Amino acid sequence: MVSQSNIKNDGANLCRHLVSAAETIPTSLAVAVQQSNGHSVSSLQYQEMDFQTLHTKSDTLAAALVHHGLRPGMKAVLMVTPSIDFFCLTFALFKAGIIPILVDPGMGVKNLKQCFAGAKPDAFIGIPKAHIARRLFGWGKSSVKFQINVGGGKLVGALTGATSLEHVLAANSAGDNQAFAMQWLDSDAMAAILFTSGSTGTPKGVVYSHKMFEAQISALKNDYQIRSGERDLATFPLFSLFGPALGMASIVPDMDASKPITANPEFIFAAIDKYQCSNMFVNPALIERLGQAGEQQSHKLPFIKRVISAGAPATISSIQRFSKMLNADVEVLNSYGATESLPISKMASSELFDTTAITDNGGGICVGRAINGVEIAIIDIDEQAINTWQSELCLPINQIGEIVVKGPMVSASYYQRDCATKVAKIADNGSVRHRMGDLGYLDNNGLLWMCGRKAHRVDADAIPTTYNQPKRYYSIPCERIFNTHSDVKRSALVGVVVAGKVTPLICIELKQSVACSLSGVLYSELKAIAEQHPQTQGIERFLIHPDFPVDIRHNAKIFREKLAVWAQKQIKE
Image (cartoon, rainbow, N blue to C red; front, side, top):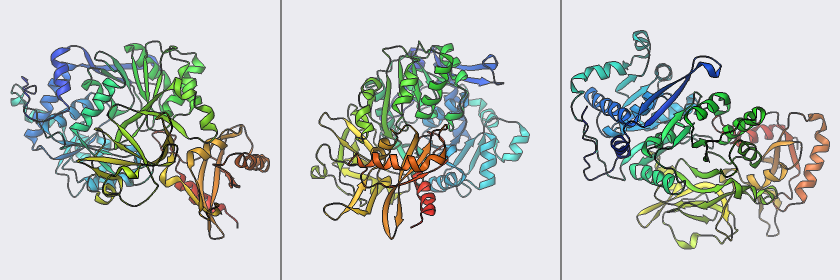
């Protein structure tokens, strides 16, 4: 196919970076996907594709999808496992101006159905398992007009009721040698819908524009110093798409991206070693798992020169363990942000290690300084919408409030969720500020400290302050204080009602070697710890829980709402 995608009209499209890479480094590796046919490293195989081929294949797919009936502005669910097909299809959708809807399969059947009902997709492109689930649970039943199956034979087609991707391509084979003109869109136009994980509430579809994607690419280039020619060990599908846009190869290990805690460390180490990866994008669960494996095997990662951690705060101990595999000068860059605005700030591991004492004494978790072009402010804690930004809303330094961010990577709205948009967004002279739903403060040096979710604070009217107001407890400061006890694996602050009043309670998950029979002694020691810190004074109730409910992806975000319901049932007034 002879492409004219590099002929730019007025407008924007993320795929311009792929076009550029196909022209400047056509034969360089763009994607490599690891495949295992067993449980051993010796069974591993790899599918590879260079930039020119990725560009050509995605052009062919874009033309075939348009010939099949899809049009610019239509929305298409994409439920394809990380693979060569995933990359080609995603770039094809962008090129054709078709809006991909990306969801996390780990969010659960109920949440997935809600997502598709709200997004009203025109097309559903997925692997056979996704199509079978679509038919079984009625995903997108009222809106989906095009069903395209990726993989499987005729029998699979009969089960899924979907047209095979091979058939879609064959139907347009006559147009293979014709140029495909890439769609150029307004920079603020909707380019994709990315759903939040739903770990702290109902998943919401975040509207991404090409301008947002461009801002994220700029941040990776300028703030993270990623360069063309690098190779990235990509463990998160969305981030892996930035590789080709940066001229960087994306190396995809054989793992379930929605359940990184189940990944095989040997497979990941093998992929890094084979391709001499210079960059890694990992979440806290994977940092913990790989760090433990590396320690047991005395494994080293000599080619890695940068590690980016995001999704949830990783513990300092897990980062320290993981860092033993890295060269002495290599940092783990801890990034703060959310689906609605990422990245916002970052902090190198060497700096983070120096904040341990503050964190352990209830000062929150330091998430670093704002990246270039991002403005961070702290406002009073309030559930009400704020229509217009005013500088008077800003709280003084070192005062805890809700974190509000402004920058080119900040999303302007949620899709078809006007109420959620109104509560989360603040208009500011033609731009938008996003209320993170996280609490924190800025210190004297401009560092941002995270103190937990706004929804996870406990306003305890059972413990009035000197002004006869409920005492406010914050999840991260409180929990990190109790986590210093040698028997505690992790803790969770919840609010329970005792004698008609909201009372703080700490749920405790013990380390494996600790017996629950010692709870009386433990509770006495925890009460003594609580009285030593103003952040925890007044907390006198504790309960041991056998295994905290956590989100699948990060294995770190505790479902405190579920723990609160459980704890309330245990209360005997």
